[in-house]
Image 1: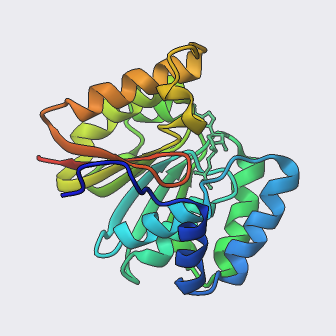
Image 2: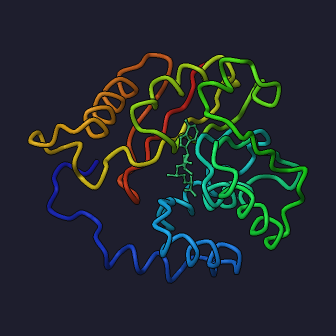
Length: 218
Ligand SMILES: C[S@@+](CC[C@H](N)C(=O)[O-])C[C@H]1O[C@@H](n2cnc3c(N)ncnc32)[C@H](O)[C@@H]1O
């Protein structure tokens, strides 16, 4: 076991890993190019590669927060060819564009279902598309709502399902006690709660903006 912090991976190691990775598909590159000028917050490419690896063998996925469908596409590319994703976002102008990039990547329309709604309202009204069981859930929408998304998801998870959440290090702000804005405080509390929640085996991967990874004990 590594017992000290004399070496931790940095930018050089991340670049080396990226150089070894499979080339980025045209559709993923197109989303990156479209999101940047519009300041649409999408997961880091490193996190996307993790999502894809963790989606292997996971046939039913639910995502909270679609935007341009970048994380959705990483998940779809990692899933089995007959896997499906239900992804929730109230902003149809974004998800309509996402559909075009998913098609460009060769993902059949039937594989990805968009629920155009605020997630908590869709869960509350028992939107049929959100009936479980899901094998993987990815949370990436409003930060103060992360705990409520998790509670809505738990009854919809299969035993052994993975729950992932992005931005849980929030560019380092969650570990800075001087920062106490609403999003940071919410994420800090969410991290602490999930990592001590007996329903999960959970940790935080220091990849991208921090990726929480929780295995549901079921
Ligand atoms: C960080 S972006 C998602 C990025 C996407 N996961 C990716 O990495 O490609 C957050 C998205 O959450 C959506 N959103 C805002 N309020 C929401 C809500 N109440 N429920 C679900 N999604 C919401 C926003 O419209 C936005 O597109």
